Length: 235
Image (cartoon, rainbow, N blue to C red; front, side, top):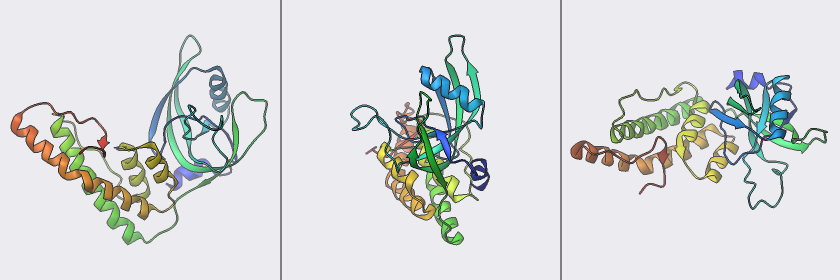
């Protein structure tokens, strides 16, 4: 993840774009920008470093109208913009690195601006990371193979970054269908080994079910109902 961290080196202030989702580093995210304040934000960041901060925030029922100081989110980079005639835009972004919000910055801008500190996972034993990454890769591949069989999908299996355990943990976490609070906890975890262990435990709980469904589908030749994501609530 070092190259992504280099992209934010020296960045201390960024616009905030709160959304009811959790973005992980290395994961692409398409957005549709239509609110006037975020149109302005997009224009401003396009004129600068193409970076903004994306915190998970549920506006409905929230005690405040903005994410709290101390929250952990993901810095996103704008990589492609399709401007529409009416001023709206379709935007492709990708998560870079995680940040912690240290404070809000008072500006005249119509959108929130925060002072942030970016961080990466702690250094850990490489042999342990390699072992846990291999376990997660194997489980995820088994489930992905089963999901493709259930959906009669003949496309290739996902390409996993086996030599980058931290990136692997984020990509698999993004592919899993989890409650947003669980995804937020995985995002905040600063131990790759711990994150991989938790992901591996959740995958191991459902792999047998998916493989049994794939076997049943093969026999019955009926369409399955599994989606593109891994549903960990599946019984």
